[in-house]
Image (tube, rainbow, N blue to C red; front, side):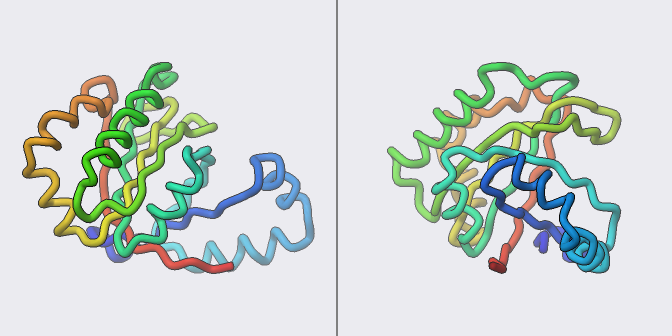
Length: 170
């Protein structure tokens, strides 16, 4: 559930590949699973696919007590360098041993998404934190001020950020 919007359920479903998800959609099990997921929603569902890299860091980020989910919406295709910039930002977090960070990963949406009139590819960054307070404390540091420019804040037409507390179901 999103911490800023407790009525908003957020789910990351991991698949071996995009093809495996499409294969599952053709099975008899898909209908009942989808029906159960739809029952849980408070708002319309907008499913989309992101290949988070590195995957092990994605797992650490989403298993953290709090996960920051930052989505950068672009008009049309995301700039080709956006993933390299996310990598450099993750390297800052790792090399500087930022207090409270448990993992960070990023990826681009396979689908074109629309948010408040912006339609195109989205870039998604997830950062696992020990707490929301740890994230907020980092934003006050000089290191954050020096490295936030690596994020595509000016190129993105819209940025949406929230915190989620995920639970794993297998």
